[in-house]
Length: 114
Image (cartoon, rainbow, N blue to C red; front, top):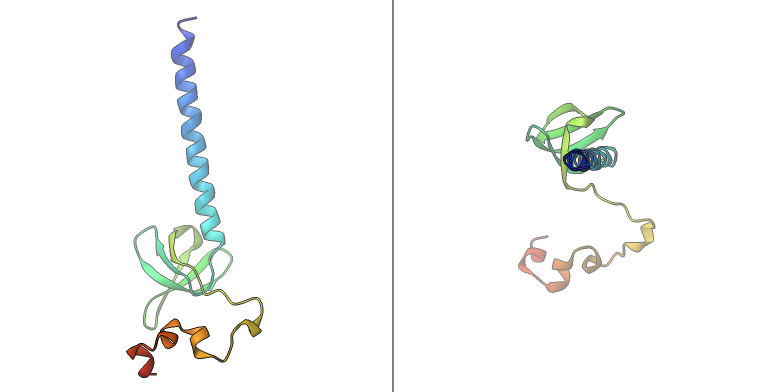
């Protein structure tokens, strides 16, 4: 009976490690499948850029002005800022500039430059 105790501990730790790896893999897969045009991402190799196009297994990434590279979707490490979300109803946007830009409502000097 005493010889089974170390075996049970090793199996329990191994099971916990496998579950952790599966959870990380699932999270990475969700990030890669939820990519949207306009999102700013970082690749697994540390390249930052903005998503220009998303295809089946690849992503086109703009890393500088007029510099676009194509990477594998699996190379996406994390999403820095998600892509722009379009409102469900276009009538949600008023013609009132304060509704679009809070700086206009505050009367900041930045709003005078526009």
